[in-house]
Image (cartoon, rainbow, N blue to C red):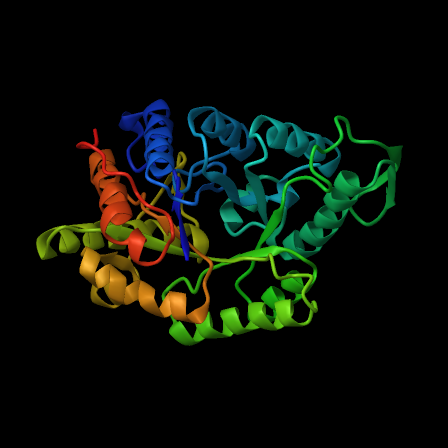
Length: 349
């Protein structure tokens, strides 16, 4: 089982400055690369300070320039917000500049506030995503493409430059519904999923759907991977564990507002609202704990056959907290699950 650090660019205080936020993310990426993490991952969101990254391909190229080995996952880019006729070329260029380390994770969009202010009604996101994905794949795989669909109509065109890898970078679909996971797997996509609040039966169903999809490909899908995204952090003591879980609860008070509604945003800053789930209930479902507790929590994921855990470690904590946690995880937890050997480093800062 491999591990990824999600560079989720949380920005709870405007006074901190967007430039500092992204420098923090680069620092985490460099450390993850040095310590032998499999990958780093970035997402796409606009107009809000949670998961703040309006230019994921640009950021992927920047990260590639500062790292050597880690894969760079876009988890995810929001296809309905882009025109595939120009986006396909941007993907090709980003793949070239990332030296073949780019994985293009794609999704339909999750925040109503964001999607509808960008002119894409939530009721249309599934249909728009499906057609956008088909157009993108055609442009990356075929030399000359014309289209006559609902959202795209165009005469024959050729995306230039041509992909350096056949079909462009490997693609990963963000899917939660088990049946959706099954069908995306059968189409040959890597899968990224999450049970969100930690419902274990939901996770079991998601994994089984992925395995069914691979099995129905008669060996053609043996290379496909299943990644699980979780809010995670390592704590050196129970007091630190409690502090970090409190920060995660505050983060979810913002996340729930924008993900589940009502989407109350004040000049880009998501308002913190009360949650139905208690702090104690949330704590049970998160991966925020001491290294020894982390081993126990990750064991079932390995037994289920999860290929990669994507660790969202940015939820309002100080940068040094997260750098220390990345190093602690690499040295005390990762060796129990991965073949990679984390080099011993001096104090992180």
